[in-house]
Length: 376
Image 1 (cartoon, rainbow, N blue to C red):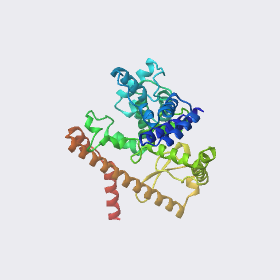
Image 2: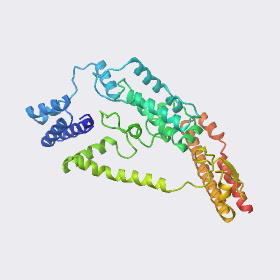
Image 3: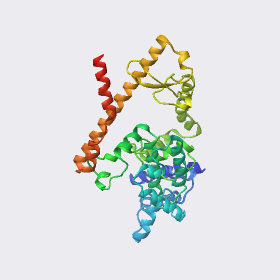
Image 4: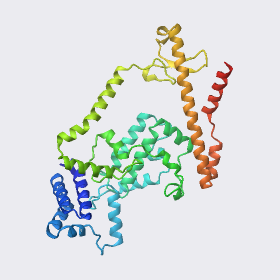
């Protein structure tokens, strides 16, 4: 029944909203369901109050106690931020020190305790280790949730080649001014936020190994996960949920995964690469006749591709190379524009100098290629 804890929490949240709207029957229905899914003192207390005194008493169960001291309120807030929301769960000094270390980090490499030359596998290992250590359902120290989110953001950026390249170009320091990260205006650091939540990253690696006891409140730029979860819960209740309905909902995802795996197995890799790839044996360096673009092939390439076949391969190499250079040039220009705009808005000479010192290597290479095409 441990896996039903989230559903029970969502039922309680829906019941609370129903009480506020004056819908006593709906609140009672969802509280009974919450007790069946995962019995908790919170749902039972609301049920008792509702059955004895009606909806007004139920709402009263959520009012803050007037005699509560500021210290106890702060302790409760920190406990809820740590992920569990249960003040009875303990934590060690090592966990507290770990959370404080993550909060002090101003660089994503420092967050994951890796260097800037770290490879994909080492990055995964570092993330796995920290995600297990700081997941809010395992680490109940104050601030564990924020630390876990920061770890997830760091991995989401550094594991994405394009975001990592942009992050390295623009520097890793977080803004020291609160105006840079909160409030209105231009928010430069938001360019480095994760496309998916740290919770989703964790579940991708571990299959949801630690069931979350709190409702997701991370947003994806459109609709909050908590709002979506409440809506799905209400729809499920109207239809009558069960194992079969959950299976039906998961079927499209399973089909997509199977199709993706089959397509990867059936499609053979290209006979060349623009970069050396020991894993595929493409380590022999060659260059095209026309633009002198370097590319890498396997040892048996020369015997398999000759004449018109070789010409077609080299044409594909040059097209891929030009496309990559064009895309990277666009990214360089966009990054420089963002830096200059941020420097202007915040009157930051450091950002302005960084923008002016950008080498724009891909844009220079694109100009060279355009001159070759015009000359040809």
